[in-house]
Length: 290
Figure (cartoon, rainbow, N blue to C red):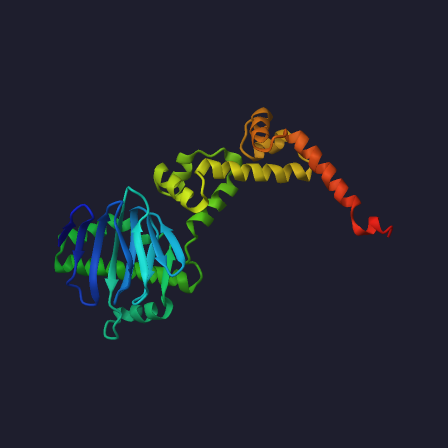
């Protein structure tokens, strides 16, 4: 069945499979959103394009392509497009009544998804075109195949959850860890955005939402912090430190450092060395002549 709600909702859904409220594919615009609400069914979705925000309680999560959300019945939540580009999702709404067991799947969902769970790298993402094609066809056989894909995907996610491989890393944690790991690579915003499967504009908006600054400003902040730590350690040359924080030569690094700190790397190191030596002289053992 084809559905269209103006420019807000566009997609396909099937509502004829027992045990499911619907199997669905939705395309939603940048201004789409739903105020806090809850369902009588379990909601399962996988983001295939764009990004969304889901708020459950006091926790806000940003889902990018490949991320999946499973929300239990009766759990109040809010969902909306994270950027002006909108997003696309595939998934299903599942009734968890006692007579719909799906070979034990319902019992597992009831046991392990008490409120909500977020996963990354859901395998259903890689079969999105096939799933959408089945919904578009809409035949009884296509509906059964689409339902089987949902069940298989949920079982995979449950296995990851049960064996400790399931939780999604928050966007801010994932971005922070990624930047920390590649400080020496002089990263560009486009490369970072590609790593997170989103556009540069999406990456910039989300980074400002979480950190209050743009991607490069955050990256430079981390480079500067690492440089200060290395300079304070005192044993590496300025040139070596420059390469460790993504600069091709010491001159460019020194210009960057001086603009941020107001001192050259060498002067900063000397000042910190004097400060550390002064702090050592101030130890209680020294003051009391012990």
